[in-house]
Each structure stands twice: as structure tokens, then as C-alpha cells.
Image (tube, rainbow, N blue to C red; front, side):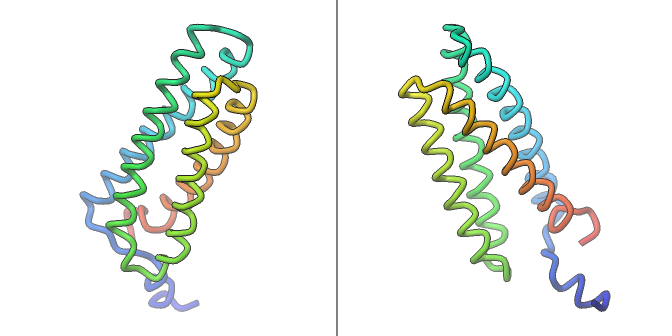
Length: 137
């Protein structure tokens, strides 16, 4: 692949947009870590952890929805639009499931789904950071 072709496959983002997306990734990671550890305590029966987990899931959904909207505004014009739309639909479905599980009190399944989401989002964010959020695009 030629260097001009390689750069054409990457997205160009203004530095402010890149910085905002990276800050959002840091916040998402923090919330995922908190939710995952809290989910373990909730699964073991901690009443306080269960209450905290409900708040964490709601905050994770709010922050991730904001991030998805931000990405869509920045990236939909790109060649990656179809992949991005499919990926975001999956993430929104995952968020709805987490919210429903938190509300139902099924902390065992919630813990499992949080772990799956944690893995998937980590892979997605690392890809984004290597591609369109890299300082040199």
C-alpha cells in the first residue's frame, strides 16, 4: 500500500475533536472499570453495590450515547459510515440491555454483559485511537 493510499484510508479530524473523543474514551474506560468491579460486589449480594451499579449503568449509558452522537457527527461523511452505523446500533442495543438488566435486578447476567461490553468497547476504542484519533492522520 502506498503512503498516499494509507493516509486516504484514515480520517482527518480537527485536533479539538480528537482531544474531545480521547477524553470521552478515558471517561468511558473509568466508568467501565467502576461498573465491572461494582457488578462483582452486586452479584455477591451487596445492597450498596447494587444501588451504585444502577447509577453507574445510567451514567455509562448517558456518556456512551453522547460519545456515539459525537462520533456520528464527525465520521458519518467518511467511507466508514456504514460500519460505524452498524457498530453504534449494536452498542445502543447493548446499553438498552444493561439498563433493563440493572432495573430487573439480574446482577449475575448484568455482570456478564458488562464484562462483554467492557471487552468490546476496549477493542473498539483502541482501534479508533490507532486510526482516526492518532495524532498523525
